[in-house]
Length: 305
Image (cartoon, rainbow, N blue to C red; front, side, top):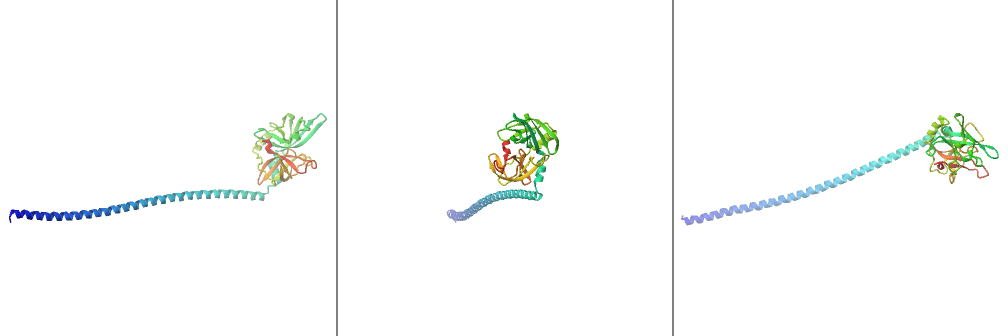
């Protein structure tokens, strides 16, 4: 074979080989690209699935947070309801217990008796010497921070004349406390007299300390039960008496009551009964039947404040 023919054969063989190689290479590249496209699609699908899963997890977490908050709110409301129910049950039990134990007049008298005093005053007038008497309540307040008696002004005045002296007795203390007329104060235009009895007896000063915590009645309603404590002119002179009734109405600074208030009860104490508790309602004022009306008046303790 000539050299020329050899070269021709070599070119043909080389061309065939290269065509075969490049053909296979092209096919492989196509297959690789196809595989790459499939892998890319799978990656996209996986990424989409992951994003959806993350969104779902966030959504579930948010719902869980909301449910937790709702659960806490429900628990808080349940505790509140349980607390309110317990308070109502306690109050109801206390009311039932009070009814069963019977907070009667004797119990109220025992509680308030040490603070109710009898007071009598000598008053000189141009015409004659007068004697007045009535009841009073031992007290101590921020306005009058000393042991004093609260009474009606008309108990310690006579026709506008002040007393020369007054004599005070307590049901459980022996002896008489004497005070000068200058110890009597008239704080305002209301029917109120304040008698300073501080530094007369240690027991009185000590007792007045506990009186400082006394509760003054508020939000009084018609029909509530009231007890009047004092020393009526007809009856015991050495110990207090008690009458009871209800609040019948209102008249300015006065409560109208069906409780009987005898002469001598003036200046005593009107006590409102509320379950096992009592509060200071005000100062009983005697009313003459036939001159005004049978229903008596109680001057509200709020005028003292």
